[in-house]
Length: 368
Image (cartoon, rainbow, N blue to C red; front, side):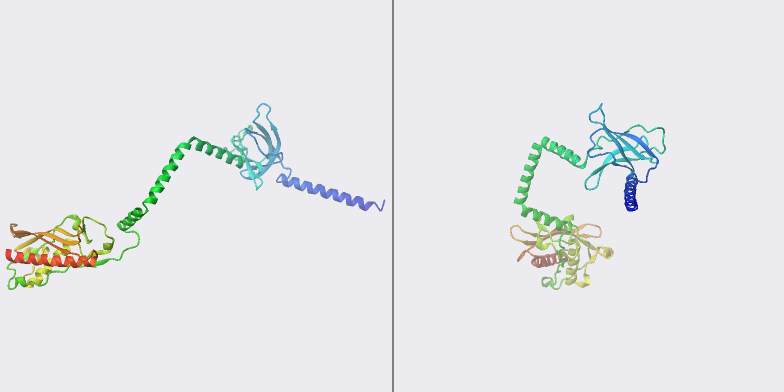
């Protein structure tokens, strides 16, 4: 007896340890031991793949119990009835939503409860009805989605073929007109100020200087030259072309002022070079002027058909203090360009304007 007693004690200790381990596992599995539980009936209107007795029950993501019973409904082939046991303090109400969730990489199913809008219990909770798609796993959902996509594609096969054919024709058209499209995009960038900013170069107009043919003559009356009038197209500092064209070599070239103001300033300067003692006044100082020289600019552009030329054309009228026309005349000068670029254009405009300004001065001296 004495030699066998230690083995009995050891065996009893091992059995007690095993029972303790199983008890601990059971306690963990039930999240808190053997507290009071409440059972509820749950009805699934479809398959519940992988759901087993003992599966966890979650309420708002927190484990509160487990599935205690699963069975098929004998009167409805697609229906599955389940019994769940949850902690008595779980706020299960009649509007609690029921579904299945698949957790972990292996997709272990659990019953998921979600709280409704009722804040307090109002009598016994009836059977909880799960959503119709509660048992649908991710794989099945993907299959259903692909099946619907396949149905849509099958029903619209002909329109899709026509659309793809039209896209092919459009792509071929783009490929054939790549150069034109590049030009259109470049033009839009220049028009909107996008792209690389071109360096701006400002050019001035030169006044007439020598008047040998008018030697010994002078202006015999005080004259004023208001700012010339012109159509809106000429109210610019850009170089203009006839017929209109967008010349990339002139993109950064501009006059020192708008064309009407530039013509006024250089025409007054031409009169000053002729007779500084009786030089014309500007419109703001013409209260003492006896006559006004009104200028209307008709042309100030580069003609490109057939050869490039600088064209300047104006109409001039001399009015007395009472507004009567004393004299009127049209002036027009042209000068060929050596080549079509800003420096050559400015040189041609200077030569043409010098002749035109001398003609205006001589005509004014004779008219007054």
